[in-house]
Amino acid sequence: MPTLPVAPGLRYGVVMARQHISSGSRFEAEIGYSRAVVQDGWVFVSGTTGYDYATMTIAPDVVAQCEQAFRNMDAALRQAGAGMDDIVRATFILPDRADWPPCWPVVKRWLGGARPAATMLVAGLQSEAMRIEIEVTARLRATEGES
Image 1: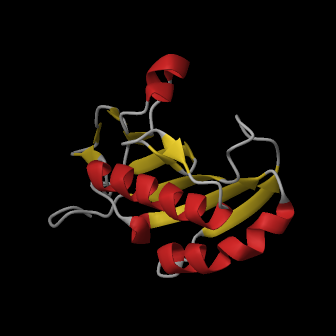
Image 2: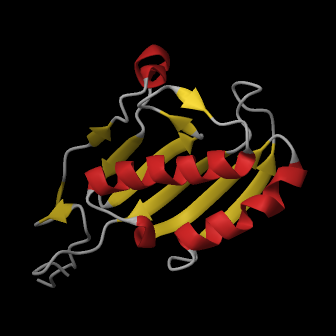
């Protein structure tokens, strides 16, 4: 009988339990979602804004919000056992397309190594204070001894 490769997140062909990751944001509990979910070797990070969850404040500047959003995502990915270089897909949502070019240097600094597939959308966000929201998907790397 042929042996099938074992993907990250699978152990001996058995699907691993779903892991929910929280940032501690009150929004997660109030709305009913997780900052990230780890399932079968994938890490799905929810749309993340520039809120500083320690202070529950948000900077007025889109570049500062973009930077904070990446710090928030980095923390979630680390909890999941992944890193920024494991990101394979990114979606950027901005209410004002003119805010996108000023964010490019921040995006390149955080994602330049991973160079994920990416999309930018123009759409309204949950509050007027939010100027950017970023959603990413990462793939856990196989650990030593896995295929």
